Length: 247
Image (cartoon, rainbow, N blue to C red; front, side, top):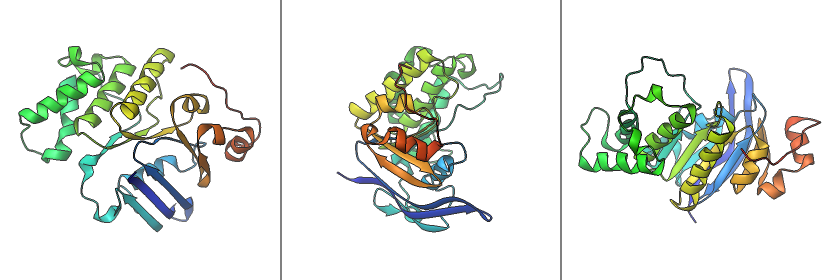
């Protein structure tokens, strides 16, 4: 299987404050990996390094075998941020937001063609929002909005989807549907997923690999190998354990 992303001995600091130290991690095609760790552990910084928004102080980052400074095929990578706060007068419809995901392929400022709109419709069908294509996105529920932003990423037909705590702000019902969608993308669409999360009880149910980060990589492996009391104590401190639950 192809190595989709790789970090080799990556270090990063904001001014003199070390954020990541000697992090090495690889993902292969078909992985569904959860990146977990306490607040301030460097999870979002790692995501920014993978998206090329930051450069490592030391070490190297690779996407699809290419060092990130030379990587140009950004349409192969989709990104879903934390739930954005939308202004009540945000004018875009669901279809318009999703269509923005095509510009990584066609280039900014270019007109979308028939094939692009077909990709938009296909993405809406995957997230089951075709019937709301003309609805202003601000009129949707939090769970529906997250599905719109996933569809925006899917419209670019990525091979790797990176999600930064996408479940924040969703109720139990929306979270369950949301994770089922991610599992479908991983199993049926053969998409590789990296999800930043804080919920150890949920990730153990849905993902096939877990990486524990607290400035350095504490451990990584299958949920059964990683979500153990000793590892969680090393990651979060004393008094923490994983509890499986359905949401």
